[in-house]
Length: 120
Image (cartoon, one colour):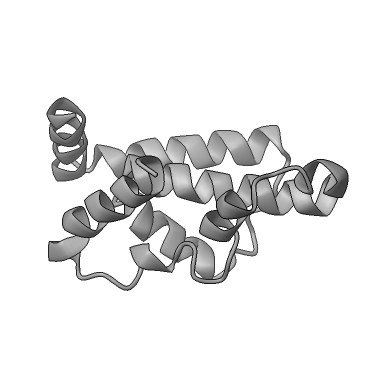
């Protein structure tokens, strides 16, 4: 895990994260034929916050989006999902733990949240 963090830090220090983000964004926009002339204001926040996402945050956000789409598109299958899982990932407060924490305390919070989520 330390290697992942070291590699990410090297990319950030050398501004390679910006180049990678721009290349990926450009490719996705081209493939999905997205008009980038009008940029949403919140897309700027995505770019600035993306470098700080950890694996747990990405995992939690992915589950949240998956469950929201499952509920919208396949309610029959959504009804079979354990209510504890739904409560942890689809509620209004589900992802807020990542935005309410000081950066200096984020690793401690992530460790506690992940332990509670994945060890129970």
